[in-house]
Length: 425
Figure 1: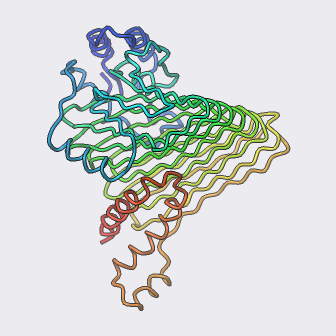
Figure 2 (figure 1 turned 180 degrees about the vertical axis):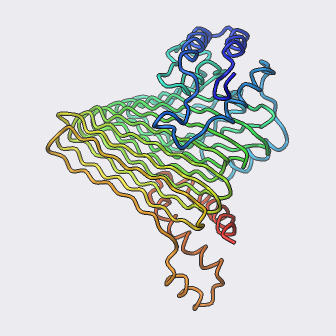
Figure 3 (figure 1 turned 90 degrees about the vertical axis):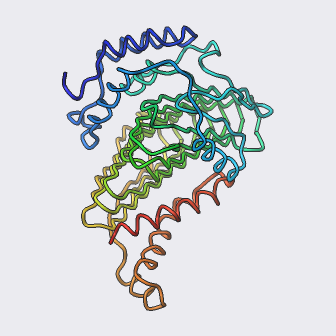
């Protein structure tokens, strides 16, 4: 068997042994679909920089010993949960190794339910990783915000995974009613060190006039590999604000796909990725302006040290007839090491005439004059680098749309930057 191939017979056997709940039919259908798809390979244009060979091997090993036992808690996991939930004020939902905790809080104006028990069996996917997710999905969360509702606190989803369970699938579906408001924090952490693969999907549906602020924080263990897919469909005058922070992991792939379907819809995507050692982070984004006038703003920033490799591929598509589209896209990267690599490709695909679109990318190093100035004011070389990298990262932090996690993120960012700057030596 080729190392890029999943053992299909094992997959189907594991799926048949999973609970006979309201996801069972979707799982079986997805397992059959996956047989014709398989994992993406570097021979495909969108995956040419990201090799999933190790993930395939880890998935096969997991399938050979898979059980249907429920997730087990540990003291380390409980300490992680306590530290994060006490630091960020939110209505928290805990998901352990893809299994939703027994108790699910529901703020006023919001319905939260398990996908496996909700009767909504329309969980599927049209790309290989989404189909793989569906085939092995144990449970998921569906959040429905009623018309004009606006919960006072953000809803936080804490994804805590233990490498003892080497494979985990998570699914979150969010539906915002007309003129509703929601702040959602997704926080992904590892409870211990070790190799693990997580495959996460978050889907947003925004009705006319609604707004969702979404912050995704990834602070995984250094041996962790993760694939994340986020989709959002916006009706007229809806707003979707997404902030992404990749601060850990060994291999991370993020796909963000947004569709502006109604006039007046607006999307903003802001991301920050820190990479050191042999870390690999791949961000692929796609913004589809299906009608106009609509607005999109996108800015991703990366700080790379060690022998890390990062990828940014951002595409904006303006459909025929989407006149009045206003779109800007940028990717800025700071290389702290001559061994680090960034592959950046911002793209515009325009089929309409009356539009305003711009895109660009920059790759540079710390300014030597600024470093000299800071050292002349009494800072040692490492402290000077820390100040300049923090200033570079602050541009993304300034775009954060959920105040509740600002202080925690700032402290976490400082800690990770200290490690990254130290890797320059």
